[in-house]
Amino acid sequence: MKNIYIIGVGLIGGSLAIDIKNKTNNVFGIDTNENHLEEAINLNIIDAKASYSDLQNADLVVLAIPVDKAVVELPKVLDAVSDFALVIDVGSTKFPICKAVEHHAKRRNFLATHPIAGTEFSGPKAAIQKLFQNKTNIICEVEKTAFKLQEKALQLFSDLGMRIRYMNAEAHDKHIAYVSHLSHISSFMLGKTVIEKEKNERDIFDMAGSGFESTVRLAKSSPKMWTPIFKQNKENVVETLDEYINNLKQFKALMEADNFDAIYHEMEDTNHIKDILKGII
Amino acid sequence: MKNIYIIGVGLIGGSLAIDIKNKTNNVFGIDTNENHLEEAINLNIIDAKASYSDLQNADLVVLAIPVDKAVVELPKVLDAVSDFALVIDVGSTKFPICKAVEHHAKRRNFLATHPIAGTEFSGPKAAIQKLFQNKTNIICEVEKTAFKLQEKALQLFSDLGMRIRYMNAEAHDKHIAYVSHLSHISSFMLGKTVIEKEKNERDIFDMAGSGFESTVRLAKSSPKMWTPIFKQNKENVVETLDEYINNLKQFKALMEADNFDAIYHEMEDTNHIKDILKGII
Image 1: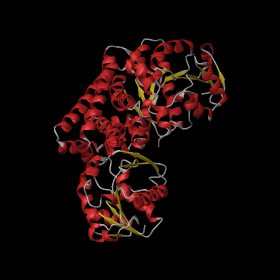
Image 2: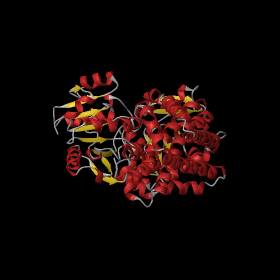
Image 3: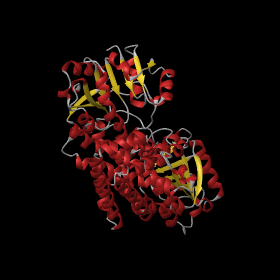
Image 4: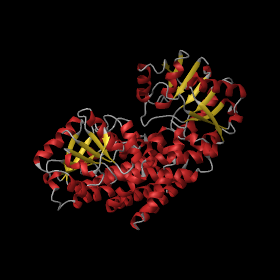
């Protein structure tokens, strides 16, 4: 793949561009934010900026923009590319984007993916080398993508050092609500609770240690990226929130009832997360 | 200080012992867990094991055991030491332990401290070098400790590379509920929610990334250590839980009402945590 176009030169698009540029010299950036394009050129993330009219020359287009924008732009991108181009998205929701192009004439040029990789930062400055190494990439509705383009995509992901998992888009959105979207909300609300309480007590944050920092890290994430994710995955996310709130209420009730034996066992049972996490990151 | 006795050779006691052993050769361990004592000797964390009857020779005693045990053991330790010994605790609650010895004849030998340092692991194997470097140590009721022993303690903390903050014990327990205890519960309940939902779907954890791992890290913590902390700080912790649950409910209500503008602003406001966290860890 010679001509690569990255739409959205932020954390994910930029990090992909960096790794891909090690293999090729034609990486172009498209972004509504002119400053980001300039930054991406200065940081040597992309070779030059481009526009949709250039997409006819693309071998690969990566759509790495907020998910509400992605569902609007993907059909236009597919309209603009040649029959031989591979178009992938990298969004955190998969059902709406698959739905948005289910009847598109170039559906077979598109591969829906979700690389489970990132940091709490955003923009081209947040882009880093080897972000995707040893990470999982979830591919949805693989059977709807042309076989030759699937092969190209798998080669790319293999070059990036990624493991592949296949899922249907609905199952992806349901499960990712638990292991990713809910974590972000729990972290944002933790940050909010502490900031509200301690707004007049600046020194208090001297009391915060690495445990608090770790738990609240995701509350640094970009609202521009996360609001549309919550919107698109509303039903699943509300369900996870219901269960999370119920578990917190139950924990509180046990405390109020001085049932600390039960609290001990709650925590002991959840320590099992150690084994579960051994396989990841 | 020549003869140092560490009561509880786990993560905190063991890590302190490692750093202190670089300055002296007489570090003794006391622990109800014989295996931990053997491990600590084999790992060169302590020089030898000891018992309460040896405490008369102590220059420094560090009490690093779960907070429910600490309130019981501290009076006995003070009974056993000489008039010249400094006794410090390192527990995550400060009001109950100060209360437990307020009328003790040797109250002036005791300094209540809370080093804001640790990991999610426990036991002597979890002990690491330089755990306390650049961390904050909160000292409570400093005026109740003999001046010469305060000086000794400050020298020790300075040698360990710690910053000092002074607070009263009640304020400590109130604020630490927000910046530490609540984080642990939010993390445990997140772990619980995901494990419950996904118990029949082992592959789903392939979908979990570093964000989930970070948010759920504290759910690996020891129930033996944390149950008594929640018990001793019940009132404050229940208050933080109330506020946290209310914030989550409000977030859910905004989602259900499709008020994603408000959700955007909630997240944007909480991004402020970035600046707050710059000073810590």
